[in-house]
Image (tube, rainbow, N blue to C red; front, side, top):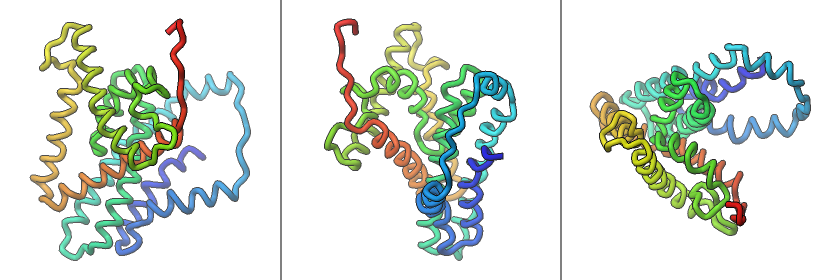
Length: 261
């Protein structure tokens, strides 16, 4: 039952967007005010499951299904917002609130779940993970995170590690530009290793670029310039949430290279 709380952010967000006006900020306030307040009040769960319980739960497909359900939830939230954004009665306050709330949903139920699915070996699960990265304009995360970040974390070669005394805003520029550039460098090496040509179906970065452009183009064609700007900025909010977490998790950490490598 407790795992269903993962859906609380999109539920609160969509309900707030439905109600309109200042309620459109609901997902933002719920995530950064109410949830931390509840965590402060509620006791810490220090229960550790034994290996048998863990093994049993890993085999239980219901936990996988709970992850998969984030795909229709995320895309459902996007298209509901796009429907609302095209209504003539929409106010500027609502647009700002919807942008921030959808951005939170894209970060919490999009990128977070994509991160988990991106580490799976199952092809279907990897595809779902990539679909969840599209709305945040961050499909390159799949390449850079798995082939770069895990290898170079807390070293100068990792753009997702914040330097000591580096402020958050400077880090945003470093990581957003750096991870995209790094993803292309990694993809180039993978293409050489596997003897692939640039337009190969296995050149992920090429197809990620096509998919990202197509996503924004389709939104523009069906929902106009207002819809285009809305999903553009909501996606930016989503990936900046991810990078803010990276900033906190890796700030000032440094690994030294030993003689062994």
